[in-house]
Image 1: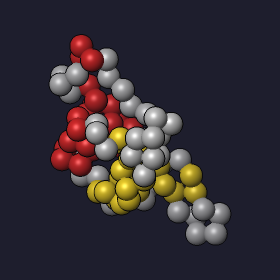
Image 2: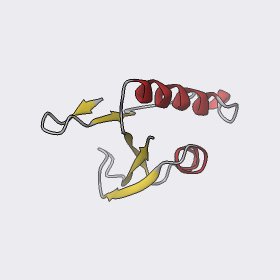
Image 3: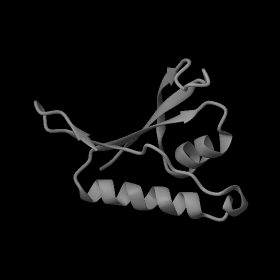
Image 4: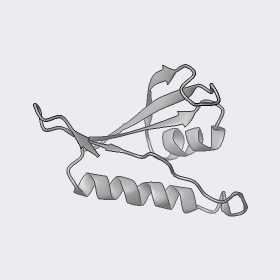
Length: 93
């Protein structure tokens, strides 16, 4: 979580969320993300940001389709392996 001292805007951040391959598609990732979103909302965040690799279709589906995140930016060569990423944001009420 970060806040800008001038405007006091709270922005949450999901740095990494991973589910063991054998346990995927069982709702664990959705539950973890929803819990993090709920907690950041309770802390007063107005939005939540994260980055995900362009090729990670599972993560993109989770964040965009199920949780309502929107693409903000394409980050070219963002990762150490030179992979591109999308920056996603969820605006909270």
